[in-house]
Amino acid sequence: MNSVGRPRPTRAAGVLWGLVLLLAATTVPAGALLAAPAGDDVVVEGPGGRTVLPLDEDARVLIDGACGQVAVSVEGGRAKVVSSGCAGQRCVARGAIGRGDGSVVCVPNAVIVTVGGEPGHGLDALVR
Image (cartoon, rainbow, N blue to C red; front, top):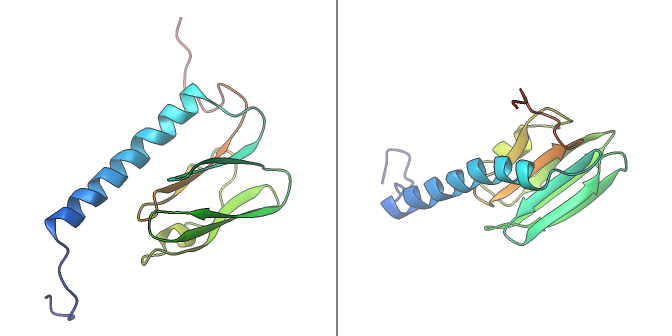
C-alpha cells in the first residue's frame, strides 16, 4: 500500500494499460486510412464494435466499454464524452471535439471518439 492507503498497481495492470494504449494508438490511424467516413460523422469505437453518428444531428448514445458504460453526446456539430464508468474521468474532462480536433479516448473502457470528414481529409501531404 502507498502512503494514501490505496493498493499499488500490479505489473499485470501495467501491462493491461500498455495494451489498451497501444490499441488506441494503432486503431485510430488504421481506421482513418482504411475506412475514412464520408462527410462529417462521429465515429465511436469500443469493445462491442463501431457506431457512426452524423455530426449535424444532435444525438446521445451509450457504449458498453471494458469497465462500464460511456455516454457520448453530439450537439452543435461537436462530440464529447458526457459520462463514463472509468475512475479517472479524463475522457469527460477532454471536452467537446469537432472536425480536426483529434480524438477523445477513454483508455480504461477502450472507447475512442473521433470526428471524420471527407476521404483524404487530415492528410499532411500527398506524394506521387
